[in-house]
Amino acid sequence: MPSERNLLPYTIPEQAGVPSAAIETYLKALQAQKLALHDVLMVRHGQIIFEAYWKPMDETFRHRLYSCSKSFVSCAVGLLIEQGLLSLEDKAISFFPDKAPANPHPWLAMMTIRDLLRMSTCYERGASYRPSDPDWEATFFTDEISHRPGAVFSYCTTATTMLCMIIKRVTGKEFTQVLRPVFDALGVSEALYCIETPCGHEWGGSGVMATPREFAAFANLVLHRGAHEGKQLLPRDYLLEATSKQIDNSIDHASVDEGMGYGYQFWMTREGGFLFNGMGCQFALCLPDKDFILITNGYEELNKKGTAEIFNAFWREVYPKLADAPLPADETALAALLRRADGLELLRPDGAVDSPAAARVNGVTYEMAENQMGLRRVRFEFNGDQGVMRYETERGRHALPFGFGKQVACEFPETHYNGKRIGAPLGRGLKCQVSAAWQRENELMIYCHVIDMHLAQLRIAASFTGEDVTLRTAKHAEFILQEYAGFASGTAGRQSGGEM
Picture 1 (cartoon, rainbow, N blue to C red):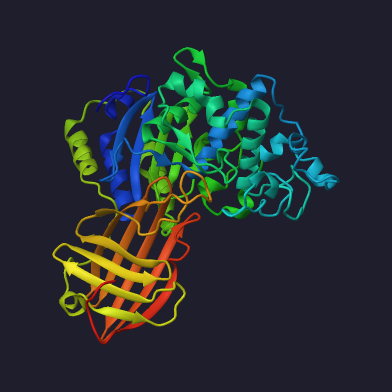
Picture 2 (picture 1 turned 180 degrees about the horizontal axis):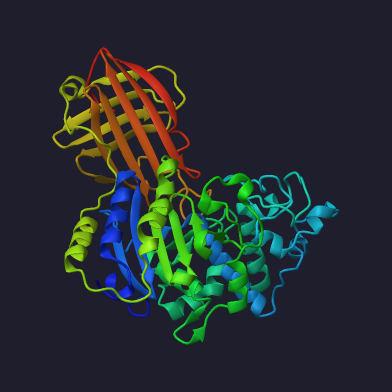
C-alpha cells in the first residue's frame, strides 16, 4: 500500500493485532447487505491497516462528509475556546445583534455555545432552512420556540450552522481556515473545502469535502486527543469533554450506536467509543481504548436497515478479535482479503442483462398520463450492454444512459441543482454512475448513483405491459432530485422513434 507524506503510514493488519480473516468476514457481511458503499478504511496505532474502494471510487475522490462535518466545527470551536476567544457559557444571541429580535424570548436569550454544541437548543425540531432562504443566520431566529434550552437533546443542524457563523464573526475566518494550521500539520491538502450556505459561509453542518485518507488522518488526531508527532494541535481537555457524554439522546434513536449519548457534535458508542456521524454512511467510529478507527463512506439512505450492519458486523466480527500485540503473519488470509477488496464494485441492481422484452419496447415512445414528476414522454433504447432512458418534461428533453452488468459514467441530465453554494445552480449535470438489470422479463430496474459535491441515490423501476409502461421512482438526496419521486403510467404512441 502506498504511503502519503505527513498522512498516515501503512502496515498489514496482523502487524497491528488484527486478523485479515476477520476483516474479510466483515467485508462479506457488508456485501451481503447490498449497500451503496464507496470505501472502508481501518486505522490502528496511527497506521492504516486496511482500505478498500468500491470501483470506480478510489482514494483520490473528495468525499462529501455530510454531518461528520459537525465534528470538524466542534474542533474549531475548541481551538477558539483555548485561545480565549469563546466560552462555552457565551450566549449565542450575543453574537448577532443585527439579526436577533429586539425583544427576544427569554429561552432564546439564555441559549449558550454549549447548548449549540450538544444539540440542546430551544427548538422542537431545530430551526428550518431552505435553499431559497438567502440568509441562514436569520432563520435561526424565526422558528417557534418550544422549550427551555440546555435541557433535552433535539438534533439541529442549524445549531452547527450558527456555530460556523459565530466562528466567522469572532475571527473573520471560516471554520476550515481556523483549522488550516491543523490540516497543514497533518498533510491535508489545500483542496479540502466546504459547501457554502446561500449567504456564502461554510456550511459546517453538512459540507466538508475531504478524501477518505484525509478524513482518517483527522479522526486519528481526535482519537489521540489532539496530539500529533509530539505536538498538541487541538486542545486535549476540550476533546476529552467533546467526545464524552454531555446529554442523553436515547429518546429518538432506536439504533444502539446512535442512542448512547451525545457530546459536542460527537456521538457516543459502545465500548467507550465516539462517532463522527454523517448521512449516507459517512462514519468514523473511534475507539480510544483499542486505538482503532473504522471509517466508511458511501451514500445509502434507501436501505436504512442494512446500514445498521456496518456497526453490528464490526462489533460481531472484528472488535472481539482486536489483539493487544502483533499477530503471526497470515499470508493466505491477507491475500484472500486483498482479492475480495479488489473485486468490490459500486452497487448494481440484481437481475439479467437482457430480456426478450428489450426488443419489443426498444425505441417505443410512451405518451405519459398526468403524473407527479411531470413526465410527458418516455422512451427506452437498448444497444448491447448499454441503454438510455429518454424523457421529456417542462424543463426540456433529457437522456439518462445506463449499463447492463457495468456502470456507465455520465452527468445527470439536470443543470439547475446546487453547486458549491446552496441555492446557486451548478450549471452542469452532477456526475453519476448508472446501471440497470431486468428483474423479470418485463421489469427493468435502473440504479443511478450521483457522486459529486452532492451525493444521491435514484432508483427507477419500469414495468412494460402490452402497450403500456408504468414507472416508479425512489430517491434520496438533500436539496436535489426533488422532481424524481413518484409514479407515472403511459401508453405507446401511434408512432415510435423520432427525436426526443
